[in-house]
Amino acid sequence: MTTPQFAGATTVVLLGASNVSISMRRILGLLQAGLTGTIDVWAACGFGRSYGIESKFLANRYTGITKCEMWEPLLATKPDRCVAMITDVGNDLLYGVDVDTIIEWAEWCLQKLAGLKTEVVISLPPIERVEQLSPWQFAIAQRILYPSGRGRLKHATVMTQVRQLTAEIGKLAERHGAQVVAPRLEWYGVDPIHIRRSRRTEAYSAMFSRWSCWSPPEEIGTAGDRKIGRLRPYEFRRFGRLKRTPQPVHADDGFRISMY
Image (cartoon, rainbow, N blue to C red; front, side):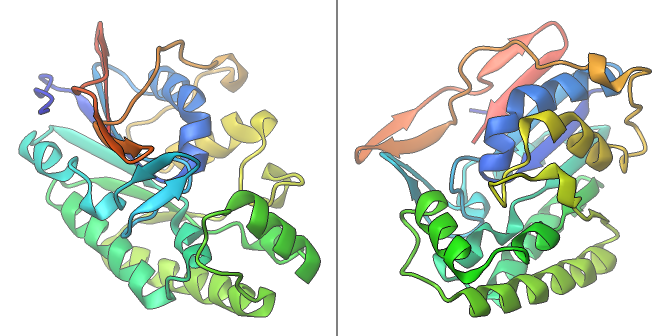
């Protein structure tokens, strides 16, 4: 389960939900294009993933990010250099989790990452796009994107919580010396929370550029998707049955990926 440390490796920690999952191959391509030397990726993500509670997407169930098995082996690596991206923090609002609890979970992650002297970038909720939703558009999006959400939440309540969460993430980042990126309206289309495929390079480049060790390639468009096989997490449940995959799930010349 433990991934051995590479000598002089850059450790990259990716925390999030479906945005990270659907963009993973583009993210890996950008990391390889913008970082030098060996890269050791640790990702805790998944469709509908919560930061603190068990979540379900179709037949799959995942533990909360703060409760997954990644943290102990990650903290044991003692990397020379560590960077992290935290995103999809607003996911838990649709599970009925209050803002204070979400901030507690995010702060727990930041405290763990501080032990690795990590440069952290946090993506704020896409508030510009979300605020454009009418009550009926919000209701449809909630049913489609969060079919297992805990009840049907009121449009006005969630809009207020999104604004509050955005402000609190800014304060949290300031306390911990993390960078924040505000998603741009043009990154989103009809889907109000998932970054459009055509904008993923731009969006993740904006986030990674906050790391001192990441340099964008001369032509950012040349950083294509990383060709890689199936990326199964260490542990999840499918139809109630526990599934486990040894980690790292991928390792080749100077590039390793561990999924949780």
